Length: 241
Image 1: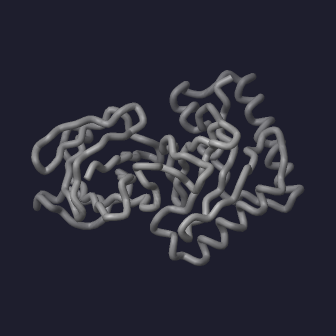
Image 2: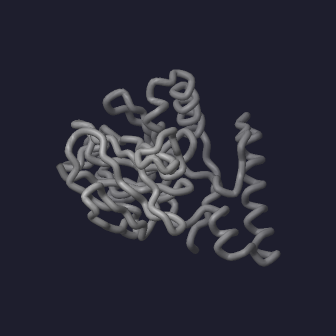
Image 3: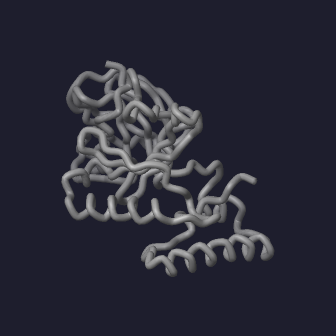
């Protein structure tokens, strides 16, 4: 079975990452952190080239999934080679069908955008309105967590009632096969944390302009009774223009 794999590092797809299979086949991820391998159902050991050495990983392939999210920052105990290397295990996005890649009848999967502590975000095509959207869903390991499900739905319903120039808009809330996902505005840009690192900071006038926009939207959220509680540069998206 041909399995599409997306390798994530620090919450984003890992580009040009060297991967080696148990059969010593070496392949690299593309610019979206993806590659495809023929993997049968069950567990598979692969190695990822990182900082001058090959690190082993364990990939679980089920009969219901053809897209695997391999999180390189999520180690578990174990060492398949006996050399003390950390064994890591992928998380599955099991409801995405590689043949259709449909999120219901309206949204079609395009690519993985990022992964956080609680959720996974992908880009999809809205076939009805012919536009790209961002789709946010709970991480696989939280699907049976009632508290996480409640918080996720509460966030979605609250954001759907809000409107501000510096706040992403919520377009839709859907449920497929017991998984809830939020369809939000897709922003063509980069998050503020990555921009700060890439540009080594900003000129004072640019930094001030960005901070004013952040302060305005946070003030608006506070007026609506919404407290973020974990606001950081990675949560702010900056448009390309």
